[in-house]
Amino acid sequence: MRTLIKRTALPARAAFLATAALAAFTHTSAASAHAVVGDRVFPATLTVDDPGVGDEFDTQFGHIKSPDDNGDDMNVNTVSYEWDKLITKNLAFSVAGDYVSQNAPNGNSAKGWDNITLGVKYMIYANAEHEFMASIGLLSEIGGTGAKSIANSYSTFTPSVYFGKGFGDLPASLGYLRPFAITAQLGPNLTTATSENGPNSFGWGLTLQYSIPYLQNQVKDLGLPQPFSNLFLVVEAPMSTCTAGACAGQTTGTINPGVLWLNRYGQFGVEAQIPVNHLTGNHVGVLFDAHLYFDDIFPNSLGKPLF
Image 1 (spheres, rainbow, N blue to C red):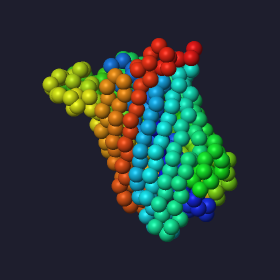
Image 2: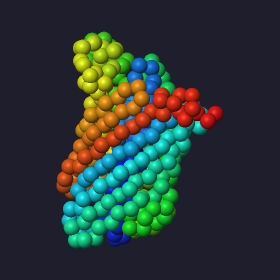
Image 3: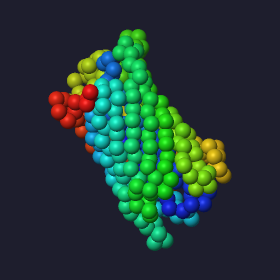
Image 4: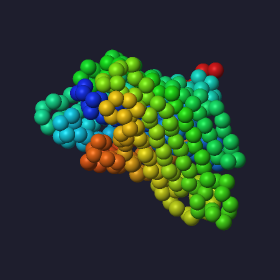
């Protein structure tokens, strides 16, 4: 799922911050479908999209203090949704939106819907033995579809590559490392604006995961009770590097440690957002997420591929 942090000013620094936030918190945010390959489950992480496709619905709330164009702290609250619909078993379409509330100390506050984001994603490879999965996709934020005080007038297109790798193929002597997994999302954010108003950037995100269910079922049953037996420990790192304009070469992003709780029909998650530098901010934020697996809840109707 995605989390947006937007700013309203247009000069180079502000444009960089807006685009960097869009890339770091949106295009490497959005974590969508959960993915299963062999014995491995890649959960729907909150800011870095996993390599799976599925019929799912996600809602998310985020809060963070972020610097405005004057360097003052601005409270930003975001409520987000995303719906993913399978076209075929390997191809999914998505639509996402965010309601953003910015409370600036100088009175320059704003709230409203951000631009609509449409996406398509195709799983190209899965290897159950080595717990590996890869997909390709395209996200398109449609400029001008949101509130003028929040949304950009220009559009952004993000072709992306997604992959996930579980460590379940490690030898038995390294059994307690086998529940680890990594996922990644990589892709350029290409805008229709000038470099001064909407500089291009490269979004990249990584996650490190440790699956307690995998530990219990595939390595050693420790007899952990609920809710601990269904937990995933996660660290996400959604990042963006500006590639054009005055901000070229500068990187923004956060480190997000958190925990996810999964069952057959959905998941809940919470993560902290720790800025990696002063351009991103100086305060820790928080994300809450609720995710429904329509393909498991309604396998013969709403969660069934169209074809």
